[in-house]
Length: 176
Image 1 (cartoon, helix red, strand yellow):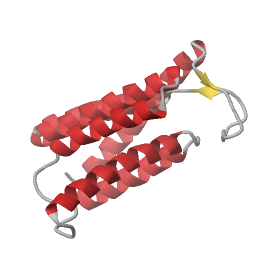
Image 2 (cartoon, helix red, strand yellow; image 1 turned 30 degrees about the horizontal axis):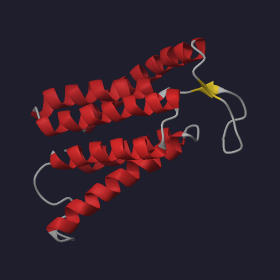
Image 3 (tube, one colour; image 1 turned 90 degrees about the vertical axis):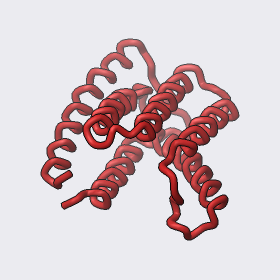
Image 4 (cartoon, one colour; image 1 turned 60 degrees about the horizontal axis):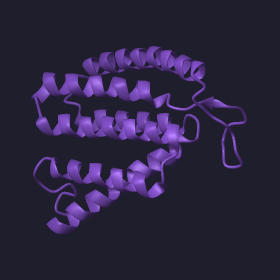
């Protein structure tokens, strides 16, 4: 995929995400789905919980289109489905306040399934023995999910992190 195609898709995805995020935030406010500040909060007034739903919806559509358009990869589709599952589960946590152990079990289950569907081969390019490669991949993935969830509580931090990662991936994988 050329850089111009990546740029056009990135701009379109950004516009779609901004529009859908505005719609979702209005609905969250209308239904009083709010995060009220406490001693650990980075905000000083009630803010909507769940704005990431719009981001995940757009990502899911993008993943599905990319899977269909590029390589029709079952593995990518399954990873996308798992990400949507975790997003839905995280929103349920936002609404109900689930136990940390329940969240960790569901995250570990998603990571286990995701690792089973990663393309064959070693993730760390033979830097680690095969069994250590798989184990370290599992641990890193679970750690990243929890790190991202933690950052999500700091307004804007997860968006900046996701943007940097996305741009880095595009630069590494771009053909031109």
